[in-house]
Image (cartoon, rainbow, N blue to C red; front, side):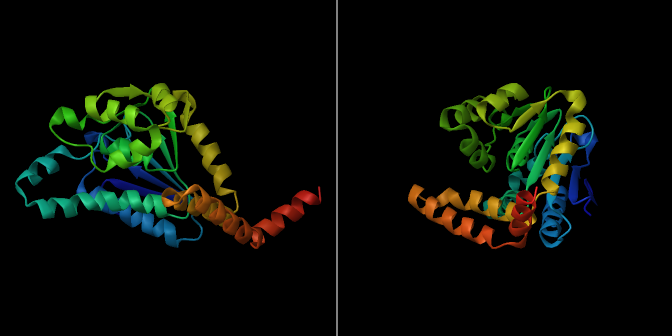
Length: 252
């Protein structure tokens, strides 16, 4: 696996750790490549049912590696666009993966790090965790991450964050809809372990159909969403997981 990314799999859960603590897990090109590789593996490996993303050390992720960004300033625009799309492809892979991706956030999740967290399906954060998009303060633009942010919190709150660059605490992030849950710092690991174990125990076909429908609704009208939902409902009834689960429930 690429330098800066540690991957372990146990009990149906693939754990991806941003492992560059001395740089606050700032995203290098090699780390982004490692994430893409790991997500591709997660898609192919049937034993993987849930993916968990976390950071080593004191922070989740401080965003892009500023030294690499500075070095790119003199490159052609098309070359930098291709470079930026590598992270964009990671965001897309997380959304398209037919398995839930859970971010477990402690410390700071800033800029691309906040985007990486909010690209996940669930975000579980320590009470002391912080989130923000400070790019504007550095003469930069929170470009791709704005897609997840705007969908999560709405226009006015999203612009408040990207236009000011202010950093917010986990309770405010929860109130905005930026993250899913907040727990006390000292129980973050235990809560995360319980959550992902429960999700890994769910029917993989039901989970895959749920996530696929959830993401497919993005570009559909209300009517189209209901019709697609009826189709997925019918498909789920035909799965062996559904038949076994209903039979077990009725035999109680």
